[in-house]
Length: 291
Image 1 (cartoon, rainbow, N blue to C red):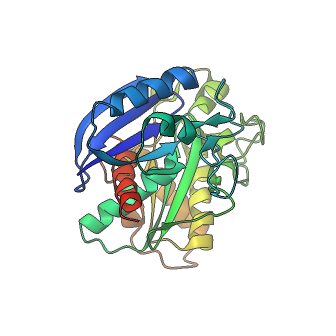
Image 2 (cartoon, rainbow, N blue to C red):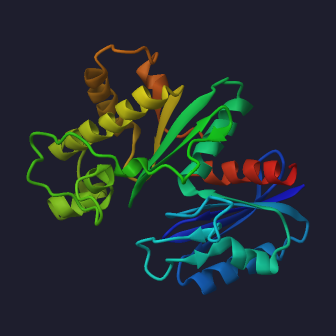
């Protein structure tokens, strides 16, 4: 059986075809330009695979997830220029007559990590997946179901206690200033230091400041959802950075609840090559087909 995946990002669309074992059979990367051009190229790609039974889309947002909304399947009021109020699923269905599943990009990644854990008999019931890159977002899966019904979670915009050495930095989020995204997303390096994060050594104090904020986010989800693990992906994250995050988290938690071994609790993605969302989409497409 062939299944389709669209990981729709603000910079690129990763369109892929896989099977019921969640293995990628073919893949293409399409630059994110205008909605019509990008979606038309995505449709043309999938038309090469007439045996596809279902497609799952995990998209940048905000998006409308409520089936009873007239804008279900839309990207709504996004800061991505030209993409506000785009009928994403409606456009796909004009040319592709297959069942479609629609969710956020981080939900797709979270589901991919959840499925990966079941494939390896890790036997976890819940997880939270954060991506920290150009923006910050997170998805949560509990017993195979996403958290959120009115809409998808926006954990990237939670408010935080400021680091005492960072009080003068206003943050860069256009909506909230110094929310999590406004303090730790990739562009904050340029805003603070005038250079990209890849050029900032891990010995720079800014990494300690960011670890303090990321640890707070992990603490919030720990105490609210009590997941089996918290996964951090995205371009800002590395294993060396997570060492700092775990140390800050340990201090903030102060042994209040038991989360087990921190190196097993706060982790990098298990799906290699940023493939969590694609794997998750294959699984979600299969679920949609089997309804």
